[in-house]
Length: 466
Image (cartoon, rainbow, N blue to C red; front, side):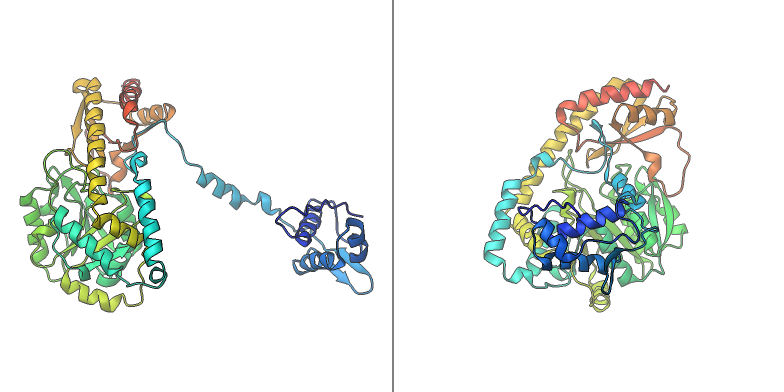
């Protein structure tokens, strides 16, 4: 007879405790093929539960094929010779490994933001207000482009801060830029060749490629995408990051922007996709206006996100579609719904309208500027052996090592020293010859009081590989 320890204080029903015990006995080999189980009446009496409870457990075991009921004989264990122990299934091992991420003591990652200054109390207050005042309507399906009030808040913000000219009806909201690129592929079709900066943001490159677009890499020079190469290509779309090119940090000057717009105007179906991913953070002078600000013929599709400005998990992005193209969008995307929760839209909308976003950006700009300047100053330890590239903007800078080093060994030394860095070569669609080693140094996730220590560790790792 089984000795099953029943815990009446557990949330788990008693029948399920019996079921789990017998199942484990079978899986572990303690009960084998043809073994007879106690009668339901006998087991119920032995462990002091009702017979119906045991019958329910036995019924579940029969349904799943662990035991069988033989008329006028009782319950017997089925043949379990082919049973695979789920607990040791290799898929679980793979998933467990994927969930473990390397933690670095000195994190020069170009991704992420400094979450120590996230306005938790303000966000919590706005969420509470939204739920109290608007909770009934916000659980209904909203407009497929995003709620009108939220789009109005974004329109006003973009016009004031980036010089973007649009109406609420031209804005589409989505959970991440990759989703918006998917919508764009439905609007435009995928029979376009897209010219992309090389190097570029590989996440967007992979998304566009998986959507079916043909990609044409175009070299990035000191002033941005090479217009001559673009003219010589047969691309009809150009994907650019003109306000702070990723990953080089180059800012496209007005002369190059005019050339790019001129290229787009030469073809009826030519468009420029402007990714304005971190335009809020510029540390010298005023923010550079968006390329869309100079567009008078509806050739720029403008994409932005709140992930860099607030938090990566916010996952709220927006796309400004030219008026003529918007007509096609409304006809093409009638079966798509907005992928951002209406509650999140309402909270972020108030965050924008009530001035909290602007104050948060001003605060973070000061914090990131302090980190940026402190990092630049600390890098002086390298003397003339490095050159700092890019504008004083964004959340990373690029260093060019003039000293010849063994790059593979250098990266191994950084890994050993718990230093997270990223090589520029990783962002090229097609490899190009580089005369020197270039690396991205992000500073958003670095603790300010650890910057000098991190650079010193980086310096030591570099000079062991000369």
